[in-house]
Amino acid sequence: MLAIRDGFIGLVAAAGLGIFVAFQPSPTAAAEQVAARTADSAEISALKALFARPDSIPFPQDNPYSEAKARLGEMLFFDPRLSGSNLLSCGSCHNPSLGWEDGQPTATGQGMQVLARHTPTILNLAWGEVFFWDGRADSLEEQALGPIEAPGEMSQSLESLIPELEAIPGYRTAFERAFPGQGITNETIGAAIATYERTIVSNLTPFDRWVRGDETAISASAQNGFLLFNGKANCTACHSGWNMTDDSFHDIGLASEDPGREEVLGIAELRHAFKTPGLRNIAQRAPYMHDGSIASLREVIDHYADGFIERPTLSEDIKPFEVTDRERDDLVAFLLSLTSADDPVTLPILPN
Ligand code: HEC
Ligand code: HEC
Image 1 (spheres, rainbow, N blue to C red):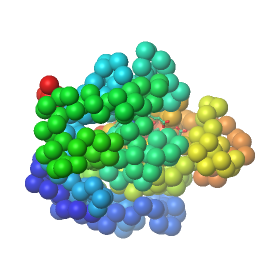
Image 2: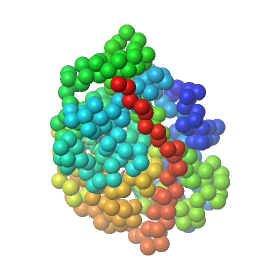
Image 3: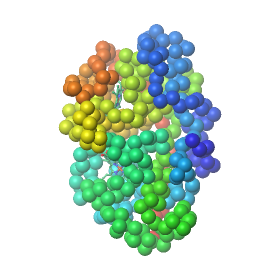
Image 4: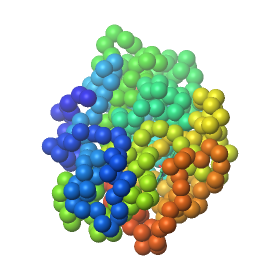
C-alpha cells in the first residue's frame, strides 16, 4: 500500500485518517457466535474492528499513482470519443450521479442495445482482486480495454481509437506528461483509466463514525442490524472486510440462467456464481444483483431469508433463517448506514 499523496487527501481526508486498523478480510469465529441481542461491548468492539477503513489507497507497483495519470484517466473515462458512435463514455453507464451505475436493471450499450448484465459500480475497486461479475479480468488495467472494444458496449477497435486520440493535440500532451516517451498505446490507455478508477473511493459514513466510537452515529435499529448481519443472517460469510466483499464467487439462488463464473473457468460447480459486490453506498445503487432482478434492499433481505432457489450449485452459506419483520427493518437500517455523502463529481473539460 502506498501512502496517500497530497492530491488525495481531499478525497479521503473525511474517510477517517488516523483510525487505521489492520484490514482483515474475514470475520472471526466470534462473529458467528454472537447472538444479536446479547452481544456484550467487547464482542461488538471486536466486530467493529473487522470493518475499519484503510487509511490509504493501494496502487500496484507496476502502475503507481501520479496526478498526471489520474487526470488523463478521468478525461478518457468521461470522453464519448472512446466509443465507435462517439456517443457513449464509460461514465454514461458508470454514472457518478447513480452510485457509478446507471439505475437500470441491465445496461444499455451501443445502438440502445439492452445487455445481459447489470452495470456494477466502480467505487472502491482499488481494493478489488478480480473484475466483472464473472471475474474474467485480473486487473483494472486489463478490464478498461474490454468495454471499449466490446461490440455491445462501446464498439470501437483500439486500432482505430489510437489514431483518433493521436490526432487530438491536447491528448498527445496529456499522454506525454503522464507517460513520457511511451506514446498512446493500449497499455497507457489502460493504465491511465485504472489510475483514475482507483481514486474513486467512498467517503466516511454514519457506520464508520459508529465504528470510530460515536455511539449515536447510527440508530439502535441499525446497530441491531449490524449484529444480525454478523450473526444469524450470516451476511459476513461473504460480505466481509471494510468494503464488505470477499472478492469471491457464489451462487445465491437468483432465477437468472446466466452461467456466470462457470463460463470463465469451465467448472460446472461454479454455475450461477457471481462476484460478491461491496456494499458501500448500496442505497444509491438500486436495482440490485448481476441481473438487476431485485428492486429494493428490503426485497434483498427477503431473498436471503427464504426467497432463494435451492439447487446443487447454491452456496452452502445461503440457508433460510428465522427473521421477524422488525429484524428485516433493522438489517435494512444497517445497510442504509453504509452510504456516505460523497463530494460532487465535476466533469473534466476534454481536449480538442
Ligand atoms: C454500455 C454500458 C457500459 C459502458 C459504456 C462501460 N461499462 Fe463498465 N460495465 C458495464 C457492465 C454491464 C459491466 C458488467 C459486465 C460483466 O460483468 O460481464 C461492467 C463492468 C465494469 C467493471 C468491473 C467492475 C467490477 O466490480 O468488477 C469496470 C471496472 C468497468 N466496467 C469499467 C468501465 C470502463 C473503464 C469503461 C470505459 C472504457 C466502461 N466500464 C464502459 C457497463 C458499461
Ligand atoms: C454466499 C455468499 C453471500 C452471502 C451469505 C450473502 N451475500 Fe449478498 N451477495 C453475494 C453475491 C455473490 C452477490 C451478487 C449475486 C448475483 O448478482 O448473482 C450478492 C449481492 C448482494 C447485494 C446486491 C449488491 C449489488 O451491488 O447489486 C446486497 C445488497 C447483498 N448481497 C446483501 C447481503 C445481505 C444483507 C446478506 C445477509 C442477509 C447477504 N448479502 C448474504 C454473496 C453473498
